[in-house]
Every structure is written in structure tokens, then in C-alpha cells.
Length: 363
Image (cartoon, rainbow, N blue to C red; front, side, top):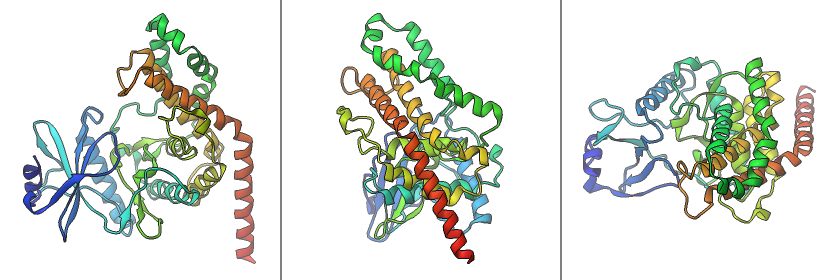
């Protein structure tokens, strides 16, 4: 396979070392390198991305726009094969190659607020640079990816069809999902009222999807653009809240380790709003804190629905794995909600500081 794929790009596989690369869970990724050259080889998971050509078309459309409007931006796009194709297809497996950015790195977890700041700023910058782009030119790469009403409906359907045993095992989780139905109801009102604007959104803002300078840790650009499509800013901000705020991730079984780091929340707000403050509408800014509830709740709903359905979507490693994941996210959600007033104070303080800095500059 490697020789065929690399050969399509004019490369000889025998002259390169090839090894697995990164921590992504969807696509298969390898680093292909020699003393002088380095690339990233990736196989697109077509079970998740059923129309990979939509990904290629979206990336090409955005690249063309940024080449004209922000040519200095580091946009890591796939390299076109020698015959001009976007992918090398072997037995219905889709492969592509990216340039490897030297002196760059990624991290898998947020250890310091500064990392959250640089990541949030890069995701904000990406959406800001595309604020004048016609979002209707992009095609969905995963249908209904962050459609919360659909996820809640799927939960209700699973609840109606599951066994009494699973209902008993998930009793607390089910009660918590139902208790927080207002999160989904608020989302519907926001969309129906036009309070949220459709934008170019990354949709997968985990920290490993930001390329950092290896020496300084300063953000360079966002990567892994397969989920870039039309959406709402609460998806990107909410996913950062869900994955950055607690050092314990969704696999943690000891819920006492799930804790909200308010300094990381402040870093996310500061970094994202430095880029997006002039782009977001006044009404949208009111939903910055809500975004965390939106994404954490949606992931909890998906885990519990999958448990009720008999664990048919997410891979599980032990009995009740999805139930535990769902309970983990419910715990994170409740701890997040308990911090809302503190979050409001943090945002107020940041805004006041920005106003004072502006006055000082003017004087």
C-alpha cells in the first residue's frame, strides 16, 4: 500500500521511514520521512466521512479564498497527487499526503492556561479570517454532527426501546439527561430566533488540532480540517470547554478528578475573543458560557443513548463503558453549571481590563 500511495506523489517508499503518528481516533495517520523530507500520510475513515470528496472540495475552496485574502496564513492543505487527484484510492480506501511543518508540535492535553489561550486564539482566528466567506459554498462532511435536537430525539427513542435492565442500570443518568432538557430547548430557541449566525466552524477543537511552535508553544494554525463546515460558534467554544477545562477526560472513572479550572476558562475566553470580539454579534456573545453546557450535554446524551441501544456506535472496552462515559460527562456538566456565576465574573473582569487598556492607549 505505501509504495502505491507514495508512488502516486512521485515518492519512493523505500527511501523513507514510515511510522504511526499522532493520537487521532478517526483517521489512520503516519509520518513519512527521510533526512531531507517529511510528510504526513493519512487514510480517511469513510465510515465516518462517507463522502470524502466533500472534504477535499471544502478544503480547496477555503484555501483558494485564504490565498487571496490572507496569503501569510499557514494553511496546511493536502498535496495534490501527480495526476491531479485529491486522493489515492486503493480498494475503496482513500489516502492523502500533507506537508510536514518543521519546528512544530502538538499536545494531547491542556496542562497550562497558556496552551488553552493559544489554541482558542487559533480557532478564533480561523473563523474570523473566514467571516466574509460565503459559508454556503461549504458542504457538510458529517450530517447533523452537532444537531442537539436530533441527539435528544435519539436518546428518547433509545429510552423507549431499551431493556428494563439497562433502564435500571442507567437510572441516575437518564434522570439527569431529562432534568437538563432545558439545554436543548434553549438551543432551539436560539436557532429559531436567529440569535446565532452560521459561520465557518472547525467543529473539533481538541488541543491536538492546533499546531504549535516547538520552542515557544505559540500557536501557528489549526489542522485536521475534515470537520470544517457551516455551523455555530458555540460548537467550537463548547468543545474547548468540554475538553480543556478538566484535566480528567471522558474516560476517567474516578469522578473526584473531574474539576473545572477557571484559569483555563479565562484563557479560552481571552484567546478566542481577541480574534472574534469584533466578529460575533452582540446576541451571540451572551451564549459564550452556554456553549460549554451545549457540548458537554450533547456528548453525555450520545453516550447514554448508545448505552441504551446496546453499545452499537462507540467502541467499548468493558461492560457499561458508555454508561460510565455518560456519567463522567454529566458530572462535568453539573460542575460546569455550578461555576456559571464565577464564569460571568471572569468575563466581566476581562472586559473591564480590555476597556481600561483601550483608554490607556488613547491617552
